[in-house]
Length: 352
Ligand SMILES: *Cc1c(COP(=O)(O)O)cnc(C)c1O
Image (cartoon, rainbow, N blue to C red; front, side):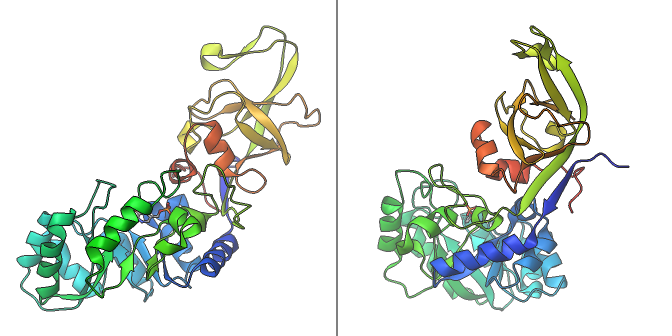
């Protein structure tokens, strides 16, 4: 028998979440499936999202895999190409590319062929990570548009504050000021902007996290948004221990029992992708009922409080996150975001 940990993926929830998003916008939906579809498996997630209008990811090899699997929608490389030798492959497989830098422009201008490469020109409106600054943008656009290898050009930017109180107004204004002179398709919105700021929808929205059933907001839960969790990380109790007052648990003994108590050891640790920095008190389900983790998370195991679960025994079912316990609640307790937890799911955890 293998270890009892597994991640169950409910691909019908992925289809459901895409429909929820469609109801919120008239824009075309580019499903973001970077990082193995946020840990959910690239090809199987793309298949569940076959009604999306396009896919966005990072690796050219993954884009080629999608094409070879028969997906016909636009496929966009969010960081663009990394070498001039990628350009013929983009053309061959009809893969769209972000262009965000002068280095990429230089590779393009040295590319001798004609074609209809779809380019998403990225503007830096305040994220200060990728993209052309306002004073470089017109020249970059000119260079892209007159290149005979380039077909349709889409203008894009990315928000730094769509999920927090600062909001999108400053970046949106900057983007509109830079692009209003051009009649070209536009794309701005990630999940947070899509769900909170309809004025950012434009021609293409780019949801990621919401497709996987997690909320991009700290103050609104996924359930309130009508989203369903896709991944449920589950395991079992493999040992039950009775503690006496004063006993402590695990490395460093960071949790010490004040009175006699029952605890369970769960086959799940940080080598499975569970966050090591999740403190005592992080929510967890045992046999479908909520309890809390205790002490430090180890590489392969963690401990849970069975005080209110007198019938929980070895073999008891544990849900680390997913159905019945939002990954957002676990992320919040561990002082991180759901994105990190989902993407960090370890390869050794079998997907079901
Ligand atoms: C990851 C990413 C998205 C999706 O963001 P979510 O917050 O997961 O919806 C959209 N656009 C770009 C450029 C991204 O890198």
